[in-house]
Image 1 (cartoon, rainbow, N blue to C red):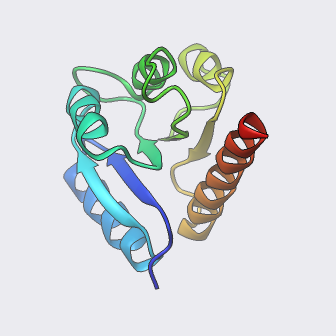
Image 2 (image 1 turned 120 degrees about the vertical axis):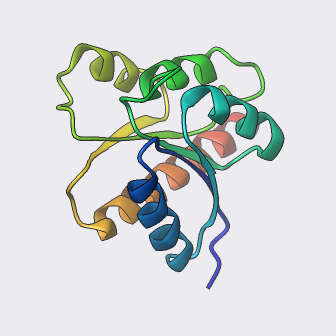
Length: 135
């Protein structure tokens, strides 16, 4: 069962990246991977994912900085971003990113079904906003 969704997983811990890739593939998504925010920017330009699922604490470019760069990009300002982190939502960097359009957060350690539900909800929200911009 393949859903209509290409997800870029940005995670610097190989074991977590592998688990996310496997689980999201089983859930029906096409998964692309990057190990840091700078590599993610190149993958986004090449593959135009439907959603970016990113860790926050990474080398080179954090997940919150990645979200800010995407919102400042003319080509990817509407790409949904889901922060996947163990940090609390009241962390200043995370709170700043969560104030951006189409940026949400899921805590690491939650069941994967909640991650998939958050992805589905964010993709639905993005599609509804895109539709309202057209009509």
